[in-house]
Amino acid sequence: MSESTPFRRLAELLGYPDSERLVGILRQILTEEEARWLAALPGTPGQLAGRLGATAEFARQILATLADKGVAVPGEETPTGRTYHRLEIGPLADAVLIDPRYEALGESFYDAWRDFWNDDMLRAAQAPEAIQARDEKPPEFRILPAEAALPTEDVSDHERASWIIARAETIAVAQCPCRRRERRCDHEHEVCLWLDGVARYALERGSARAITHEEALDILERASAAGLVHNTENVRTPRVICNCCSCCCAFLRPHVVHGLDLPVATSRYRAVVDDGACVNCGVCVARCPFGALSQGDGSVQVDISRCTGCGVCAVACPQEALRLAAVGSAAPLHDGQWIGELSD
Ligand code: SF4
Ligand code: SF4
Image 1: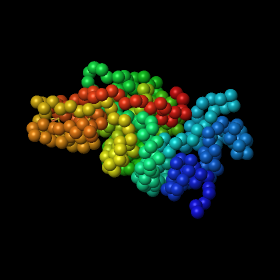
Image 2: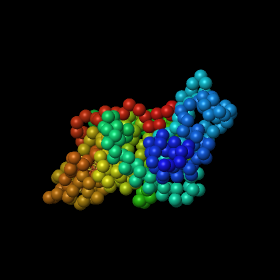
Image 3: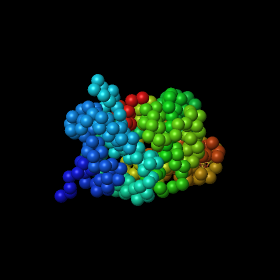
């Protein structure tokens, strides 16, 4: 029987009670006392001090440390103080993986995350109860089409990256946590766009760089040109835009490499080829991360069942023979934000 420690209790609360890898990772980023406090969240400093037998001052300090380490977030203000929340495993991993202070732990730290992700998490994601939980709600993230590939009319605001960026007051760019964890390609690392409350959380911890609206749009354009797929929160006003490759991304890799269901919503668009303009050069075929394109007799063919409406093929076509066209209506949005406890 495995030992009972605050680290194991935390692994259990994060959804992986049997993961020795996660216990090992937690041991590297937290002291035993910090793990005990993190396991006790949520709560205000006053509530937790009473529950864990500490002074209010000690509670304030240790909760600030947990937030600084990227494992907890300060949430809503209450009459007795601010409530701190434990991050779920996805945002916790992202916050830790983009934090340059953990680089001192060496590559073995990132190896541990990679093994945990590709083995323990992937196995858990295929459990019947996990599949059922995913089926009960709209996906938390959705594919955001490359804007240059969209039609000129009848596009909703939240389907345009430029609209999402324009409404943000604070924008930060961070390292891609998936590429830091997997290290499987040469794509640019500093491409993750965090907005407003999520951006401020990363900026306060020194894990991201503040950028302008114009710089954010440049990053998105560069990412599309490099064949990276935008993914964003599946809500109307998202606070994260990722630029994803299929070899490293936590969303795309399980689908493209391991053949599991795509865990994000597709866009409501699909690629359409202008047969007269297509010269069958194959550039788009190599570009599509989902294997939805093939060279046919004289022009390229689209397998609609594989197309996710990301648009990176259209951006790459030298003949402008590909575009996105709307099919059906938009998928339902999710009802909660990523790190929803963080206010703007
Ligand atoms: S990149 Fe354009 S021209 Fe080349 S095969 Fe694809 S659609 Fe045709
Ligand atoms: S064909 Fe491939 S690259 Fe083009 S929109 Fe569909 S999924 Fe994206």
